[in-house]
Image (cartoon, rainbow over all chains, first blue to last red):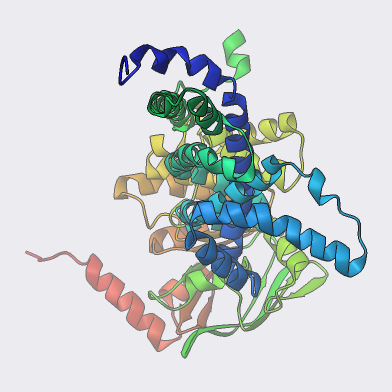
Length: 246
Length: 252
């Protein structure tokens, strides 16, 4: 064996891996959007204490948080087709289960997994907005959902942003498990490349570097957003237009 | 005319308001006074449906609305016809002063942005806060925030303005500016219910004073009647205690 560790290979194969970066990002972003939307709904159901739905939400969150994501991916990949096959058999429907790509199953599993975690901190963020402001919005005649959209969410988002960032980072790393649903994303491609040359270790180092760089970029973007969302420390006084002309 | 009838509210066994009825004429400025915990704030909050009373009716014009029924349409109708000024201002933290005042006009009244802006600037001018239009609530003193909150309520052109201890959370030296603003709008014929502990101000600004005690109206009359010739023993005691506090510590 000429060399145990091929240092150069770690960097030269990065472009090959990056070919699959779009798939990784697509997986992450779509499941994140699903996770936030579903998480927000769960949070609102819990805050508004909607009967029945609240119990379902609590059960759902407990179930999702209590099972490993890998198991959830397997269940999605094998369970959903089985369910539709059963539907087809039972009711004579004609769902084309075989045509559904693994990508969909992976997104559904990752998104649902995220939503359970997101629900709890979105709920905390929504509750952090003072009741005074909500009462003020109500007294103006706003409905709860108008107040939610115009008053509560804009303020809650600053509170939720750091946790949302965490969530995004964890979902990006979660995508590396999508191979279980037969999706070839970056990590899967790494395993394939490694399989060709038996240089697995180098590939994993390359992958580690790529994921870390992505995370650093996300951290920086979040910092920028946080800065933009913050209330400015000082602003200029307002001068009426007619006075400007004078 | 706005009519409140048989308003009752209790928290568990604690009766806060019991069969309170009140006729409010247009342009009335009614001062509501009384000891702490007698339901003054609760009365206003029940009118604005921030609390749901066990029973009670409110008539706005011809329409009589049951306050104890949680009918969404009625609730929004009441709230759109009443404006509330809170003890703790409750401005929208993430919005500028101008946006705070425009918010209800845009979201609730569906006015176009330009028109809302025009109305908001007018209202801000009335409370002397035009220069602060671009600022955020956290940049301002309590008195300034309360003036903006008053502008926000007035911009909606409410039939009835509810002021819930508007100066209680302010530093003594900031109380004056807010009272000046209230006095000015009272002079313009707005119908108001004012809960306050500023006795001399209530006497000055209102044309009718109500004394609430243990959930009942025990005194109702012109300021001169209530302050100078209270009929009820409880009212007499209340003013006696007040005067005791105003006496000098010692006399040479």
